[in-house]
Length: 510
Image (cartoon, rainbow, N blue to C red; front, side, top):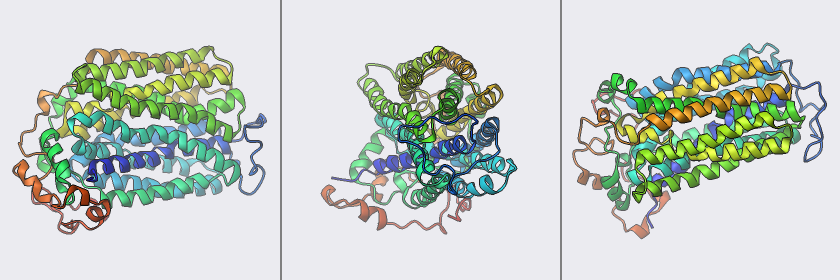
């Protein structure tokens, strides 16, 4: 059986988000651990942490509001680079833009423990977090550019949701690993672990992923047929493509603004889940770091399950014409985020950790369905400009900035302040659901029609020529290792030119 290249793209994309999004949760958990509370911790599910009071433990002079402002610095840096990141992925190779983004952030992750431990002034940590946000702002728009090229029409929802399942499983894995390692290995073990994994992933992504199906020398005939029938039919990223971006029409489009507002609300809640909920369980219920890790991870695991199953479910409804694409996106968004909003508001009336965990698990779990709404939507509206739309939607990171800022201002180390924060978050979420339900669309927009008729993203003149890049062996003889590591046509970075005839000098260093 032929190895499906798009499956490999999805798998590596999943791992990339699993690692890079985990950076945020790792840092949040480390801050919860090293900012010691005056209240004694209750003994956790697994007994007392054996690093407490040893050389492998750490206590810093930061306050909880300081740690929230560290998170605000990260999200502000990310906010600044979302749209430029989308442009870079449209103008240059999205594969390289994404790889370089995660590589730089991973190196900064490895550097981070040293200023935390040896410099009492919080400014260096603040700067590093800002820089991490700045470079990570490129990664998601660039990755979406690659996924857009590799996603046949009938598989868009499931491919995007499988990739983004890495982002939503990431906090669960990061919280558990950080809680365990901070309790029984060292306070900084997870920072080094995630930084190292990020470096390895960056090189694997850049060296083995191709921007488009037609640039892959080992694409099998079975996939060639799929892309010729259901390919995105967009042009390769280049200067000429970037110059044709219909900025004014994009910015006046209500369906685009529905995506942006959906992203704003999602970022508000998601940043709360990965940066504030661990602190909530410590402040309100005096949990230790290992217990917090396992407790805060459960809602994220449930969300990952719903994200994957919801993507398949929505795809089937659309494929069998039970729902239009527009109605499918709206159903996913409104059901997923609507239930989550009600559960967040319900937390205002909760005073026990068990009920709080139940509401968070139900609300956050169902929110995974909404990934088949606003997250997939850019691929529906404009496949040619998906990196631009993703960059615009990622301006919703402003929601994360405001969420962490408000948390820093309202935090009072008691249950009531957290109840107020959850009420604010739930109300904002409901407003976003209403706007998306009215103005969203799942149809390709008139301004998004490609001005060139060349298929996919490759510099070829017709679909039949795609077969030149296909290996001629039988389906049964196709092997992943043979086509991936011994390609029929080698790609030389030194001779890498864009479709305008200009050398792709940007990012050629990797």
